[in-house]
Image (tube, rainbow, N blue to C red; front, side, top):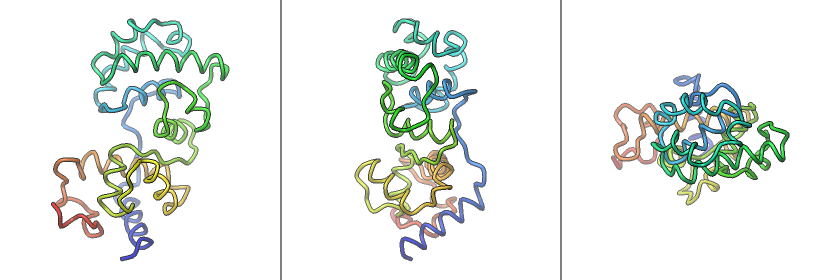
Length: 211
């Protein structure tokens, strides 16, 4: 099976078996999504969803977050990974959005990456999820699953993975493909013990004999 056939088969399987795929983070607007995605770095969505209700009650807007102090924010997010740096990033993000973007979360990847705590992955998530602009964010799940299946040729970095995936996946499917691969990696093709016996992609996967 060549690369073109592999992509065609994997996409067809996801379209048939996971026609609806979306973020598991809880949010109501771009501001809340931005906060949740920053908090989710190296942390589970489940943990983030546990703390954001109280956080958003205390900081319901960009303005209220921008006016907060680091210790106050830390108290609400201390159960996530790297709470000190994330507290600083959240406040800095809010202040920069207000000062540079008129208090509105920007929609372009380039502008988003100018904000504290926002890298390529986070920018792609915000662009695609909040603004419905095609983008394919590569987190640890996407990186792992793409390499295991054979969608990428042993890519060494998320940037390499993103380039290869977006080269072969139609642009209109970039956003949902991001969620397909994340959810598959989260619940089936897990890091320590992939569930190959229950995996519908095993018939196409180049790694199926390894586990």
